[in-house]
Structure formats: structure tokens, C-alpha cells
Amino acid sequence: MTHPARLEEEELLKQCRRENTRASGPGGQHRNRVETAVRLTHLPSGVSGQANERRSQRDNAREALFRLRKSLALGWRSPLSDADFGQEASFSPSEAWCARLRGGRIQVNPSHRDFPALLAEVLDALNLHQDEIAKVSALFRVSSSQLIKFLALEPRALAALNARRREHQQRPYKA
Image (cartoon, rainbow, N blue to C red; front, side):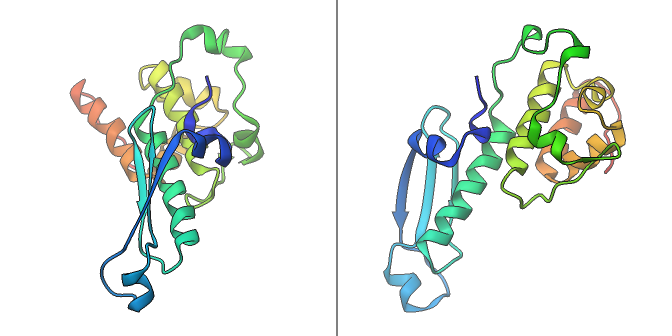
């Protein structure tokens, strides 16, 4: 099953409820009198993303979708099993991940539209392999420190990993 953060925009929007509301605060008459704020709720999971800082509803919708994808990447785990990965030697990261590998380093801007999908891919693998950074980093063809740096691009992802490590009396990772 494809993680919702990895779905094409049209497919993800089919699974969402959209609400347009008026934004409050500074921004002039247009912002205060027109429904420019956008909230998208992913119906299967209940996860939502919203934006209201722009004067344009279209710009807020784009930002709300990106925030929804990040929230889904962080909070919704794809149901995976060992069979999904088969032999570790046969596992291959997504094309999007491989396209961003440069000499064992992952290069992606956290504001790039593909970032939530890449984050979901790594978090699903960490979930499957019980947060074994060394194992997951080998699967994704990067060093453990590179994987930690990637997770640090979204501070909530690294914080959640470190919280789970503390529960097991392990030292937290530093970016």
C-alpha cells in the first residue's frame, strides 16, 4: 500500500475534505473578508494540514497540502511487514530517494514537494526495523550520520525517534 504522503496530488485530494474559511489577523480587507484560509483533512487518518498566512486561497491550498503531507509522513505509518522488504540485499529505496543520493549523502531541501514522501519512506523503514538506524541507513545507502541529518531536517521526526530511544534507556541522537 502506498503511503498517503507519496500519492500524487489528485489522488491525495480525493481522500481529503477541504474547508475554506476566513483568516483573521493582519493582511488587509481581502484577507479578512474572503475565505482564503484552507484546511485539508485526510479522511482515512483524520490528519490535517492548514494554511492561512497568504492572501491567496490558491497559495494557502498549496501550503496546506504540503503541511498535510508532512503531518502524514510523521504520524501515519504504512502497514509494512518483513515480506515487504524481502531480503535486505534486494531492498531498493524509491527512485525519488536514489535521485537525491550524491556520494552517500542525501540532498533534499525540506521545503521541496518530495520531502514528505522521502520522510515517510524512511520513517516506515525505521518503524519496520524497530528504529535500528544502522540497519536502515545501510538499506538507504547512506551513513547513519547522514540518516540522522536527514531526520533532523524535520525536527519532529528526530524528536520522536529520540523519545522512543529514551523509553529504551538509549542515548538520543544529535543532528
